[in-house]
Amino acid sequence: MKNLIITNGTIVTDELIHKGTIVVIGDRIIYVGDQVEGDKIKKTADTDVFEIIDAKGGYIAPGLIDVHMHGVNGAELMDANSEALRTMGRFVVQHGTVAFLPSTVTASKENTKKVSQLIADYNGGDDEAEILGIHLEGPYINEEYKGAQYGPAIRHADLKEMEELYAILGEKLRLVTLAPEVEENLHVVPWLTERGVVVSMGHTNATYEQALAGFEQGINYATHTYNGMRGLHHREPGALGAILATPHVWAELIADLIHVHPGAIKVLLNAKSIERTILVSDAVQATGLPDGKYVLGDLDIFVKDGAARLAEGNLAGSTLTLITAVKNMVEAIGVSIPDAFRMASQNPAKALGLKERGWIREGNLADIIIVSPEFEVKKTIIRGKVVYNKN
Ligand SMILES: [Zn+2]
Image 1 (tube, rainbow, N blue to C red):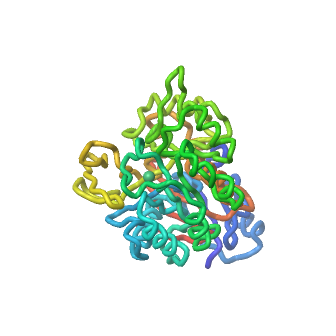
Image 2 (image 1 turned 90 degrees about the vertical axis):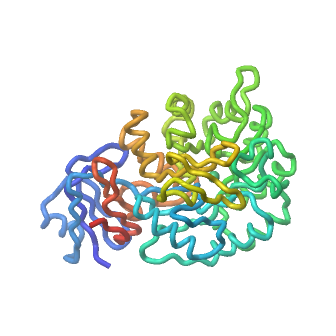
Image 3 (image 1 turned 120 degrees about the horizontal axis):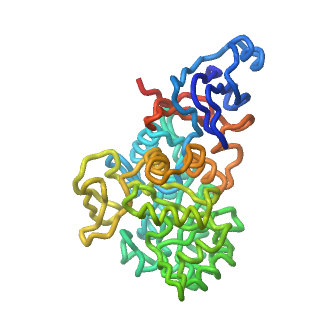
């Protein structure tokens, strides 16, 4: 593996470094700063074995981390085979994602265990994004806000099932979405957080008080804010109001400009700040494919003009890539480039407690993407290794 010198681009850190250079030794970033002459860099790096990467005036940005993604390109986690994970890993890497959480939808106990085992056993290839673990989006949700989840399999949380899944997954059980207004669901929250699992409120009819009770138990995260949750009324602020009113709670956002109106995105950013907002794709298997009929878990979905819906019309995930979400935040919402990237890299890394990832700075793992000024991904580097190279 060659060490890397990445030059001739705008580095995206907390601010922009124009005409910047990054030096990568092994899997680490060891220098971030102004462009320096080749000899000087070599001296800094103390070795001659470099590949020089010319960013050609594009952005040199942190690799994206997608904590909510069901599938892409005709494959989804609920297919329960490793080929599906491979398809996902290969696809997202071409769109700037370096690490992700394949996400379940509500399914039988048996199927949920099966996909958990798959994630636990999976070893990705050299051309794939890293799988950090699993996001269980359900089955412990509220029927009234199930969205595109399979109703008959919705159930109350049960510690025995949690223990079985944790025994399979260990620390790869990263994120669990549940509805806290259901007493049994609320009871497993401390058990999960004690084990380092992030617990999220989602697909929920929680009132403001019930949501706060959930936060009290350790929920510190919200699944696709606005979508699949009780809305804000000024006399009953609901689950949404509780998220907006509680500073430490992380808020996911599907920024495809279909799920949430740009005005509501601005409300979210004003309430939560850039620091607590996380961009997710919530991508389904139709992502990267033309309009048509697809599936999401046990349900049929129909994609028209890029919007995925059930026959009844409910939105059913998205066909978004995370880099497009970043682009939308810049171009449609007016967020700065560093802030837009941060919501899809540093923030998800922090929410999951990942160390040394999600951020371009000296000492961190070299998860870097090179993106044209139009947000086209040209190169993806994971742990100092070029895993995608657009010719
Ligand atoms: Zn989802």
